[in-house]
Amino acid sequence: MLKQLSVFLENRSGQLVQITEILTKSSVNIRAINIAETNDYGVLRLVVDDNEKALSVLKDEGFIVKTANIVAAAVPDSVGGLNKLLLSISKHDIDIDYMYSIFGKSDGLAYMIFKVKNPDQLINVLQEDGYNIAGPDALGIN
Amino acid sequence: MNNYDIDHIPREELKKLQSERLAAQVKRSYERVECFRNRMDEIGLKPDDIKGVEDLSKLPFSYKSDLRDYYPFGLFAEPMENVVRTHASSGTTGKRIVVGYTKRDLDMWAECIARMLKEIGVGKGDIAQISFGYGLFTGGFGAHAGAEMVGATVVPMSSGNTKLQIQTMIDFGVTLLFCTPSYALYLAEEAEKMGVKDKLKLKYGIFGAEPWTEKMRKDIEKELSIKAYDIYGLSEVLGPGVACECKEQAGMHIREDNFIAEIIDPDTGEVLPEGSTGELVFTSLTKEAFPVIRYRTRDICSLIYEPCKCGCTHIRMNKPTGRSDDMLIIRGVNVFPSQIEEVLLTNGYKANYQIIVDRVGNTDDFEVRVEMNSDNFSDSLGEISRMEKELVSSLKSMLGIQARVRLVTPKSIVRSEGKAVRVIDKRKL
Ligand SMILES: [Zn+2]
Image 1 (cartoon, chains in turn yellow, red):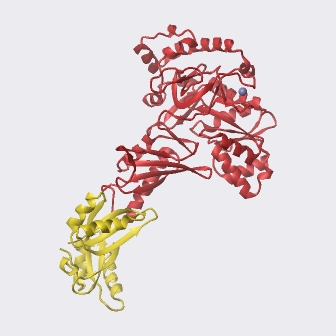
Image 2 (cartoon, rainbow over the protein chains, first blue to last red):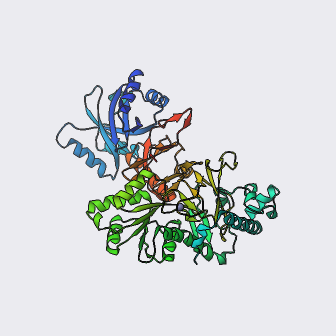
């Protein structure tokens, strides 16, 4: 299963660059990034090539980090491609907590990352509808 | 109920009166209050050993924690059928503390304030708006009864709804205002904005329940065109009215026929020489339902023994300059860091927090910074903000006032020499 890291951030300047510095120093490659925020704080979500390493170096620096399972599905590169994908999900009454995009490492495809309560169910549903679910290799994850 | 001459009693006579009352109070408390009797027995002191005020320092102290330990009525010296009123205030933790009054206690409380009103010139024909809260807190009740006692017309407004407060002051021709000093400034500001400040008929204001400065007094007097007087009290001892200013506005006269004040070293408990600054300690002489003996107020101040120009022979106290514990007064409400700690722990946070208080305009800005930890962190922003809202509402129900919560990253709260700084009070008072 694909993993994502989420990090608690305060909304003040310098917090994000502090994290990218730490990851750079540890030679961790960021594959996708997403930030959700309020006025005071935010949650940074990261897909990286080496989860375990990123997790341990960020924790060592005092950040609060959590790991979660995610699902990445290829989005057809045509008008209505994302729309069709979302319809497939909603017709099975699956709630999407949030989503963001990532590009395939070698295939050049656009993938959409989904965070849902039950990722196994989402994978089954999408595979039945003929969607291409990315494994770690496709996204350049070790 | 005309006791006004008591304010001019010669000091020797006052001392005699205090001595008689103290001996009687000690005897009565020993017989009726278990906590006090145990403390006396522990040090081998008998009621007969207390003959007068010179023996006061032999007596054991009493503390706010006693009220928690004997919650709710365990320190009362009267059977409940004689207790006609209770009030409560916040304790250092979730448990409130409760005090009680007999009919005579309430009369004494009213009289303490009536004496002040009479002296500053309030009486029949005056209209008194009480904008202290009415409720379990002692707030408005003493002022209410005192104003009625001198024949003023009372408008029991309670706190809140500023526009209505101002409209009432104008429509009713209010001449005397009771509230917190910061609220007085806020009212002035709002009246100005409404363009009705010149319609106010206020002559005097009596302000208390939170720290304020001479500068604030000048501002209030200028903005509202009134004379602003200070009043002191705490519910454990009586409520506002234990000490009140006179026309001279030079310290608050302690109602020494009802209370003896001492200044002690908060660390050693030693009584300090006249004029020293230290912790204020009160002994009640006439209270029936809830007498206090050497009660540690935790307020730091000094007493003035020089005779006052007004002719009142009772000593005065200066405004408290601080606390010997960590209690904060925010928007007129007592707040203990331990209360905040308790809320955090019950809401699943660690006790890594910092309280930041500032005065913005005329109101207290109150922020609680809380360090996130991995147990309550979620990758969903909605979940975090739901927890944050829950924390805000738990704090509100514990403290009675609204705090702004700010979630911060771990270890971001300033630590000095390894110890976290729990309170940053930026108010210049
Ligand atoms: Zn005086």
